Image (cartoon, rainbow, N blue to C red):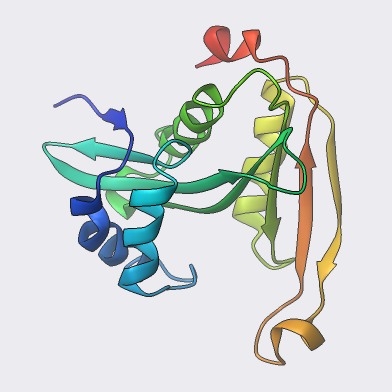
Length: 167
């Protein structure tokens, strides 16, 4: 089996990323243009997983302008054929390791029904021996009646030297 390669995204990856997200419900599908922007403006904090020159994973993340010590993970997608192989974890580790030394927290939002993502984030925090906190962030009233509330998960502080040991 060919090795999985983790790298920064290119604008030319946007179509593949858009398709990957579209094919991985319940992820929110955003416009192709948004994925072009992510690959162009946020390539330093986003990560692609590639197998046989095909995009099989994508993590969109950015360093928050409000909290410069925090990497906000917006969306993570892994092709169904490649799940449960640690790819999502490696995507987050890769993004975090690309940030400067001042970034010591990871944040993400998750709906209460998304137990798989919640468990992943709890395990990620445990592996790094970092604190895990969860609190309501956006209510259904804000997001619309057809969207569940989004809870904010905050992990950290993270000792970045541990990333080399656990990755």
